[in-house]
Each structure stands twice: as structure tokens, then as C-alpha cells.
Length: 188
Length: 188
DNA sequence: TTGCGATAGTTAGAAGCTATAACGCTTCTG
DNA sequence: CAGAAGCGTTATAGCTTCTAACTATCGCAA
Image (cartoon, rainbow over all chains, first blue to last red; front, side):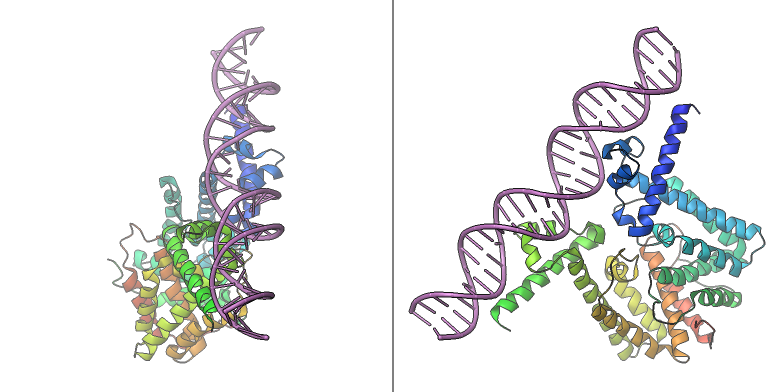
């Protein structure tokens, strides 16, 4: 990799960092290439050398988010975590930056279609879940996923405010309840 | 109510109708007051007579969505539906217009804070759930909510594509499994 | 019925966004 | 060391929200 490409990668990383900061404070819909450029001390259109358009930047962020989550889940599982521990690790990863979780599992960006390599990375998350789920893996893995996401997305969206709910205990209870699940007819 | 106010209400309704159409096809972030005005045959700023800004229009849409969902849930419960029936009714309501469900339970608009009357209507949804839940109501109602939302939001976001999953069966199974739930320590 | 005041709509314009085009300047590379 | 590739600039088009100022109209009250 020549110095040209090294610099290019460096700038792309810096752009993504500013993008995450913007998303964290104002959400993905407020992400502005213009504002990022100004923060980096250069003028608007310069960023188009690094990202063809706004969607391509968001795609890069989504890919990074999936990879980070996949790594976190893999590390937890390989570190000896059971299903409850895996759920806890995922929840803590989401709480670090709620918008990062919501970017990949929240309301889809309209008109946006994830490229194939993105879905490949997201499958790595599911792969860890399926490994940890126990038999029947697909069934229990699916239930794990929907239960964790159900509590987590409502928590992150603030729908538990003023309800005296402990989301951590709720997740734990839901995943522990999976122990009694044996099989089901959820396949289509 | 004089003719002035009657007309005003009529125009507001028409604006909201066009807004829903736009949201259904392109999502809430693509909602454009300008485009709505053009569709109605008048020029941009005219709409500001009826909605102070974009947020106020969205607030009106959210309130209508909550009211529609509350009415649907109430009708199902009063019609003799059990918990599974209630879950089915909610899911079918969401499938009619996914963006309507995602508007109220999806990723929150950053910086947007729902006015008090909006949350009052959303409480009506919870009220029906709590009535239908059975004892302990808060505990079982909460689990009902998170489980239904977990499956539904992932389904609406398209995360089940290509996975041969039957979301309807999944919801049914999850809610039927609530029968074994007795109590829990999810309170904070 | 007539006249006035409130209201609806208009155009103009500011400030912001994405994105493209055309132009220098720099920097790596053959 | 020359040239090509790449970076950053300004200008511009077209879109958005939203404010300001102006006109016309409509309803109500005397």
C-alpha cells in the first residue's frame, strides 16, 4: 500500500469518526457531509473524493458497526459466556453508543439497500448466536435475537422512561426463560 | 365551529393524508412539506398556516398513529380477544402500514420530544395490554410488549428476509409462552 | 348591507443540504 | 525529471425548511 492509499484510508477513518460523533448527538438523519468537511477544515465537495455519496458513507458506518458487534459477540462467546452472558455483552455494546445499534437494527433508512458484503458481516453475528443457542439452534437463536432486540430497542428508544423498569433484569429473565424452549413451528 | 375552522380542519386532514402517502413510500425522513403543498396545488409556505413546522406535522401524525393503534387494540380486546389475539391484532395493524408502526415504535427522531398529550394516548395502548395481561399485570404486560415488538420490528425492518421464518407463528409462540410466566424481578 | 379585521394564499429570499463540474496545485511514480 | 493521477478549491444547480412582506378574500358584526 503506497502512501497515497495510506493517506486515503486515514482521511476516510477521520470522516467516519466525525460521522459517528454527529450521529451520536443528532441521529443518522442529521448526518451532514458538509458539516463533517467543515469540522475537518476543508470545504464541502472535497469529501466526495472519499465517499461517492451520503449513502456510501452510511454503508461504511453500518459495516463497521456490524463488524464491531460481531467481534464483541465472538469475544464474549469464546470467553466462555453462556446465552445470558452473550445477551449482556450485546446489550452493553449497544449502550455504549445507542445510535450505533439503532443504525443497524433500528428503522431502516428508506430506499437504502445493504450491499452483499454488509449482510455477510451481519451473518457473523447470527453465527455466534446460533453457536451459543443450543439445540434446536435456529429456533432458540431466533427467539434469543427477537427477545434481546425487543427489550433493547424499546430501552434505547426511551420507551421505558418513567416506568420503573430494569432493562438488564428484563433481558436476563427473557433469556433465562429460553431454557424451557424445546422446539416450535415458526418456520414458514 | 365556524366555516373558517371547519375548512382549516379539512385542509389539515388533507395534508396529513398526503404525508402518510409520502411516508408509506419513502419513509418519514423523506417527508417534504414542499412536495405536499405542490400535490395539493398550492405553493410551499402556504402549509405553514396549518402546521408551524415539520415537527408539528410529524407530531400530529404520531398522535393519529397512537390513537389508531389504541382503538385497534381496544376493539380487539373488547371483542373478546385473548393475549394471542391481541398480539395478532397489533401485528396486523402494523402490517397495514409498516411506516406507521415504525414512526411510533421505531428509532426515535433525535431531538424530538413528544408532547404530553401524545404520551397520554400511547398510555392507552399500554392500558389495554395491562388489562389483557392477567396477573401480575405489569410484569406480563411488559413481556408481552417487548416480545411482540421484538418480532414485529425485526420483521418490518426486513431482517427476516431469506431466513424462512414465519413471523406470525413466532409471535403466537412467544405470547403463548407467556402462560408460564408468573412473576419476576424486572422492577428497578 | 356594508365595512373592517382576521385569515389564506402569494412571491421573494435567507440559509442549509447533496451533488456535479471545472479548474489549479501537489505529489507520487515510471 | 517529466507526466499523470489525485486532492482540494470555487461555482453552480436543485432541493429542502422556514421567515417576511404583501395582496386578496372571506366571515362576522354593527
